Length: 144
Image (cartoon, rainbow, N blue to C red; front, side):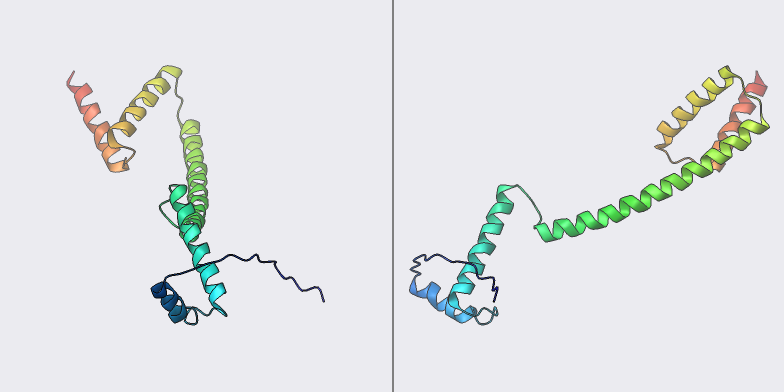
């Protein structure tokens, strides 16, 4: 009742004696019920490899989807981390802005210096290096 049988068409296949011997040797080892099942499985596998090469893919679909899944997880974690850092930075900026009174010109100069520092260090700025730069800058101004 309600069996789901797929219709199959006949296709004549005339393998060489060596190929037939290899098919007979391996179809049971591959848990196939018949030679036909084994040949169909082999043809589908070969077609999958052709499609991969046709799409210029380097990795099989299974590996590619596994990597995509892991990258998705990494993206979510990095997004959450970036959001948390942005919240902490906003809090810090709010505290500093509340404690000091900056004018527009000071802010422009500070922003320009910060952009220069980030570019020069490729974003790897430490508090110690920044404090050292500030000390050196103040020493140079004191000499004038």
